[in-house]
Length: 384
Image (cartoon, rainbow, N blue to C red):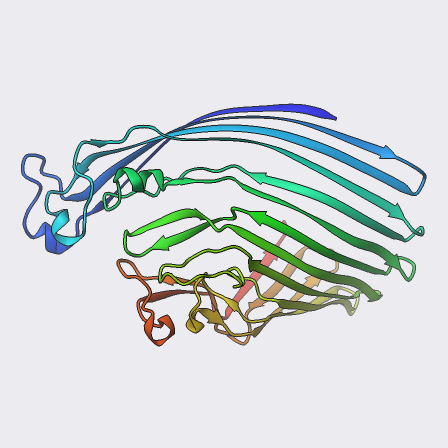
């Protein structure tokens, strides 16, 4: 199988913000009457093309081989314009750009060749073993995050982020046992990512910036199963171990080297256990009950070294119950998400206008994104 892909994109991105009340107190901008803080325009022109080739070969009745390669070429050109900046804005924040600012083209281009190879071996009629070597490519580009606070020539060149590449391998098994009532899958993997693309909020310049995080090595193992224990009763479980470590020098906003730290959200051990049961109630009804629990080990909330940036381990329990007519004409159900109202954070970072305080483990000048708490939903359904 072979193919060619081409894309030409022209993107116009405009944004702005209303001036704070204490600035509007001084009145609109003389000559324009505007009270907006600023108006920003990003124009992006991107051209991409790629070609790929893939070969599937049944070497024997039990051994299959797949080989492929993809070539990608991408060019991006971005310009920034500030048609308008509120005349009193520099009083409140350090503004580098003024009304009428127009940048020269900010350009990025890159190309890549990504091969892959995999083998699948049917050890028995119910068990398959596979091994694969894979590479990946995510093109870089120009970020649309520039604000009037940061439009100098070096800052605009800093909007360019490099392409992300990866290569590694995985091996695993897929098995159907006990006459097909038990399915067990296992995987071991190891991948190395170069110039990992991440988005970070820069509190000092009030902007989210896409950056490259050098080298990240991600390795781990996965085990999951689905077991139909009896008619109407099924059990599912999974266990995952992940180690995703920054293996190159990278410095956070407090100038601390993060080499050796786990990337944001990598929890080490995670697990899931679920039970689904359905049974008849008399001759005209059917009931369903599901109970699922999720466990997460502790993890970093941000790519910072402070202790405060870690979420402790936790359990979350979800539940579901339903009653339905045998002819499926009507159905009543209740769903509970995070039944025991477990509090846990998804990520953390700097507050607007502030750099994380290095004292007291960076506890000050921070913000947290908290996961939703307990939620119950009720549903009644009737088919006419």
